[in-house]
Amino acid sequence: MHPLVAALKGELIVSCQAYPGEPMRDPRTMAQVAAAVQEGGAVAVRAQGLEDIRQVKEAVDVPVIGIWKDGAEGVFITPTLDHCLAVIEAGADILALDGTRRPRPDHRSFAETVAGVRESGFEGPIMADCDSVDSALEAAAAGAEIVGTTLSGYTDARAKVEGPDLALLNELAEKLPEASVLVAEGRVHTPAQAAACADAGAFAVVVGTAITHPTTITTWFRDAVRG
Image 1 (cartoon, rainbow, N blue to C red):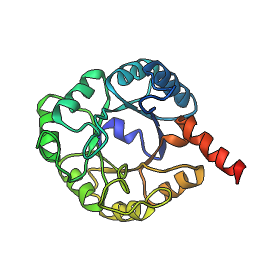
Image 2: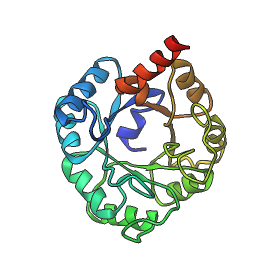
Image 3: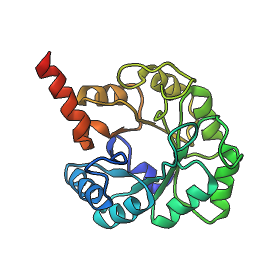
Image 4: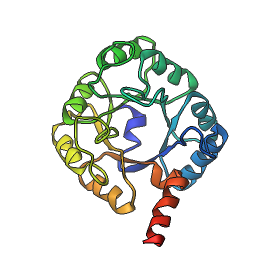
């Protein structure tokens, strides 16, 4: 097991992202957020966009999981081999990309993309953002050291559930090969849900919105107050 992967066992990863047009959509702000969550005990951070990755990398001493969102439909999380290579060049310690079975903009399969990344000389871990048991198992077979449930409920592969997809976690905990580890990501909004993910077999848990997206958190409290 890669040392960067081993260090994630039983720990919290925090995703530090803001959406285009939002007040916090600035790489400097995301770098400060990343430093803050490291202070709180995050053992890795997930950063989106090339400049965010560069600045977050300078701000923290923990591994940076890098992605590049390009577009808003279909495969848009680090969607092509060129995007992968750019994320690596920006300084990501761990490369994350869409791990679903959907067609990619450059017409490469996930396995072909991973092969291209390895041919480039990148030796760090690769994380596959998956949406189903089948996509997760295929990503693991293709060489993804980390398999995340990131896209469960965001494609046609599985229905979206409230909170994390614990059923998917339970099934993957039994079926995923030992060469890959299982990371829970997606709609983990409370400490209790994070604990449930760990109980379901997650090697590590990613939390994003509930920690780093004040706009959404504010709407939760606003709606509660208004009844």
